[in-house]
Image (cartoon, rainbow, N blue to C red; front, side, top):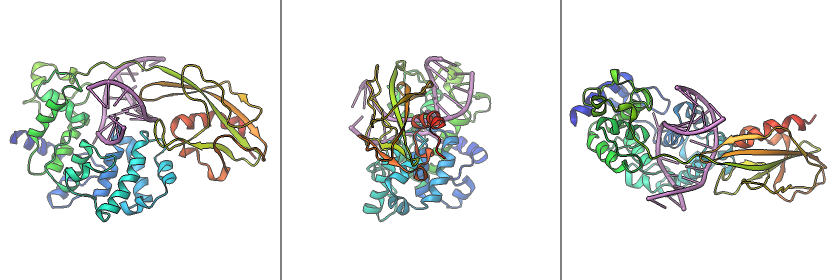
Length: 350
DNA sequence: AACCCGTGGCA
DNA sequence: TTGCCAAGGGT
């Protein structure tokens, strides 16, 4: 066990990827640990999200809100707008809750134990272990998709996920060293991200190629096994884009919970098999030829788009008008942004 | 436990 | 086009 973690740490010393929220192995050895706030922010953003997608958002958030105290004082709408496009918007809502709880209950300092971190909103088993290990060098075991894949291959475990999760977690835990646990956590994930990849694993240059049971058995590329998923259905809906004579747009803030919760969007119908028209304001609506297509985690969406120019005095049944100068399309989640891109062409305002 | 929750890149 | 995949959490 000790030799396995030691050999991986040696590999990591040479191959650690550079990320803004990460402290290099050499600096960590000198006792330098990263800012827990920056680590927390990165780990929440990285939940089910690629490093490439996270970089720019992390930079922007640190610039706008340099500390957890600053973030806790932000307006909800500003956080949601800054998060727009990154997806899984419950993360942004929980981000704010968590920041405010850290300020209220922990004097603005992140707790430094797995158990205490786990009590915070948006911090589950993975993220609590990651922050404890990476920001505080505690010997906690991170188990993400990378670690599951690496363990399944290292021990040639054929039980399909998610049933295999406890066994994979147990193996990962047994390998976690007391020394440099933060580097080790990042090392296993880097190994999974760069060498022990889902497709075409680079077993030939893997630091664990000799002890790897799946490589010996020739099964590496087919692991981990996963239980098959249902295929995604298609739902349809109608989105209404109204523009007032002064250029203002009719938008609404979606309910706090559920799909795109708390985000800005166009008023519209429910999304289902056959939507019933539900215009948010009386107007002469025009149907666009093009429809907006978007795929969410568990369904495809096809949105028919209705546009209208409305009089200055019109009072909407739903939503509220937002002045042209105060509306930024970048504050929209992607599905709504696609609607905007198609509708805006026909609703220019001079 | 099973389901819900975004997005973009890739083969 | 389709399905898979990415440093998961909440309910």
